[in-house]
Image (tube, rainbow, N blue to C red; front, side):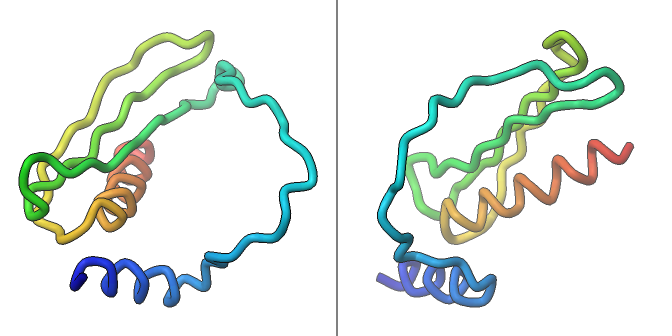
Length: 97
């Protein structure tokens, strides 16, 4: 329950709408190669066996889907949602390098 309240407070802080309206239509989504000169990053946060052991993993792809490399990090955060946020922050920092 404590983690649920922490997630709720983070969502509230960022002003995220947790009650979206009715879905007007479904759109198919597919992964596409990044434009030349751009890098595409797929990232995810996950909890392992224990809630206190979370990770964020990312994969970097260049033009034409060329694999650039992975990024994986163990975090000492309380929830998967916070791990997701850390993952986004870390990949932006790595992308700037």
